[in-house]
Amino acid sequence: MTGRPRRGRVALVAGATGLVGRKLAGRLVACGDYAAVHLLNRRITGAVSAVTREHQVDFEDLDAVAPLVGAVDDAFCCLGTTIGKAGSKPAFRRVDHDYVVAFGRLAQSLGARVLVMVSSMGANRDSRNFYLRVKGETERDLQALGLPALVILRPSLLTGDRQEFRPAERIGGVLMSVLSPLMLGPLDRMRPVSDDQVACAMHRAVQGQISGLRILESDDIRATAVPA
Image (cartoon, rainbow, N blue to C red; front, side, top):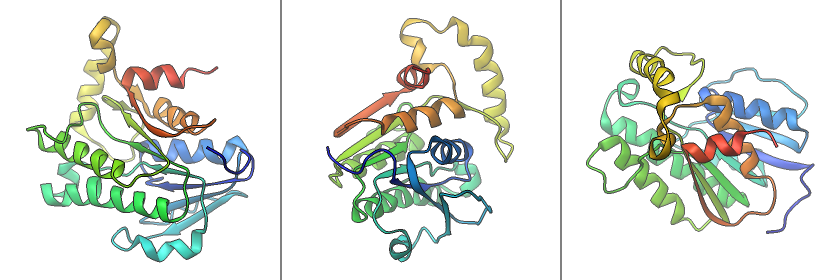
């Protein structure tokens, strides 16, 4: 794939207020490759840098932001919630499927050469588990857009300093940190990954020439995130 030189590119990020999104936005701003990093958030955070462009958006109407952003090169989607936080299964699907696919369409309309998105380990559109089924349907519908390149990350349990308290994930994180050294062979992909590792893998995924579909499982994310 051809495109702008690495320096001077334009990035588009959805969900920069979340666990991974905050770390990713910081990396994109600091790396020096981007002339502009557009952050699409439901609330203004006040993020300031020479290249940061923050937009308060309604994810029900993403087309409205297109004229403010213009052409982009690399798009990153870190949108996601939980059924508990969303309040219901339909509300969860609205965020984790509808908003993510709408962002994919926006990225495509703005000429993005690649979309990198965070899904989940076990995502499967045919799963009997509602959460994993929605994640799988989202992956399917993004692939159907026909973007030049799509990179899907499927992390296991995410660790990091969340702004909101999630008791189940906190307990799970403690247990997994104890068991992690014992997870060898096929269990390796189930080891927890940190927000830094996922953000690093997302950033590294757009470096170089890429095309088509690429899926990174948890073990791939950890390997990709290891500094060169």
